[in-house]
Length: 90
Image (tube, rainbow, N blue to C red; front, side, top):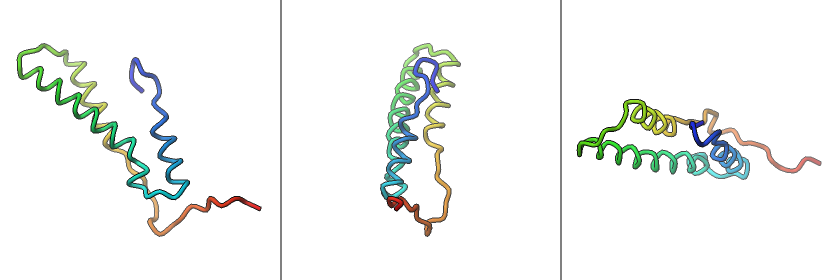
């Protein structure tokens, strides 16, 4: 949850939905991968601004760094041989 953005539930919902329709887990996590890439580019821009002499508060830099790292560190743990049974129940 970001201070201005509130809870970010859509990536979780999309991931679970993709897994339930049988997509590979790597693809199911694509929202997290895209978020990580966008936050990495943003952090890179902040670091570049700092290298050119811009003043960025320690809190802003730390928040950008933590948000980027948090977006990267999601995993799904489970047995790769197991399958979810999602057929309609009769």
